[in-house]
Length: 127
Image 1 (cartoon, rainbow, N blue to C red):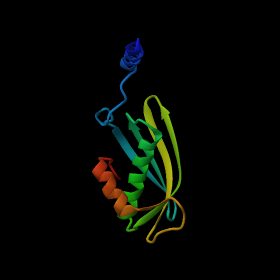
Image 2 (cartoon, rainbow, N blue to C red; image 1 turned 90 degrees about the vertical axis):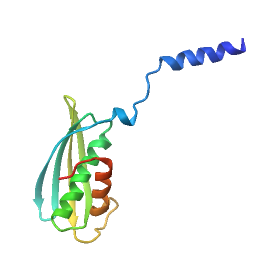
Image 3 (cartoon, rainbow, N blue to C red; image 1 turned 180 degrees about the horizontal axis):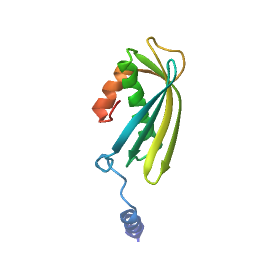
Image 4 (cartoon, one colour; image 1 turned 180 degrees about the vertical axis):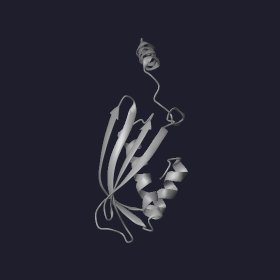
């Protein structure tokens, strides 16, 4: 009878769906819209499908912000806010960042060059 418990556990394990793997996550990036709000304050509207979590679409916005900072001749950005929504299978993020030539104050700052390289390594497109 000692093995009956293990057999039940194994039977239940066989019924649970497999966890997604990295191969299952092949996002489809739909593009970035950049809006200059005021001086160094920039809004990034991004869209993608096949995201697994809100963090995936927020990372896409961060990658766009990092590359945009570099294009404008700045080395840093500070995250202000990100709103994420999903509708009809399309994930959207509306993210706002400040860009600056030197490390800004705040907790959510990014080094634009480092983040852009990391995005490229992960296959996340930038602006």
